[in-house]
Image (cartoon, rainbow, N blue to C red; front, side):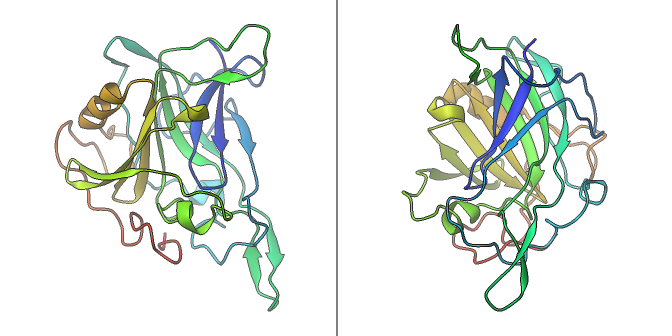
Length: 245
C-alpha cells in the first residue's frame, strides 16, 4: 500500500495523494495523532501576512475537538486503506507594518482523513496519484470557505457551484486532487468536510452516506440525516476573517 500525502495549497484546500516516496503508510483508527502521514505545505501565493486567526495558534493537543466523518470500513466496493489524523504546529508569526504579530500562512495541516481504494502513480515517476475516494475533515474555524477569496493572491478564483447537501451549505468543485476528478466541500457544524473522488456521482453518494463515528467529538450521526448547521462565518465566501474556534 502506498503512503499518503496531504497537500495544502494556498487557498486552503487540502487534497489527498498516494505517493511512491515518503513516510510509511498509516494504520490508524479514531482521533489519535500519528506521524505516519507525509506532510507538505506551501506558503500563500501572496506574500502578505495573515491577520490574527482564532484557533490557528493552538497546539495540536488543544485543537482536536472538531467533528470528523467517514464512510466506515468500505464504500461501493472500495475498502478503507488508510486513515488517521495529521496536525502541524502553528505557522510562524511575523510582525506587520504596525508591529502587530500576525501569522505567515493562512492555515495549517490539521485534518482527520479516510482513504478508500488505491491508485498507482505513473511508471518511472516519484509523483503522486489521487485515490478513488477520500473524505477529510478539518476545523472550520481554521479553514473557512472565505480562504479561497482572501488568499488567492490575485489569481483566477477557483470555480465552484454552490449547493446544499443534507440541509447544509456545500460547494462542488470540478478540479479535484491534482486537477482531475471532483470534490464536494461541506460545512457541518464546526467541521469543513471534503469528499474527493474520480467520479462525481460517487462523491455525491458518499456525501449522502457519510457519518460521524461514535469516537468523533459531538458523538455519532446517521447516514442520510440532516447535518449540523455550520458555525457562523464558516460557509460565507465573502467573510473578512475566520470564525472563532
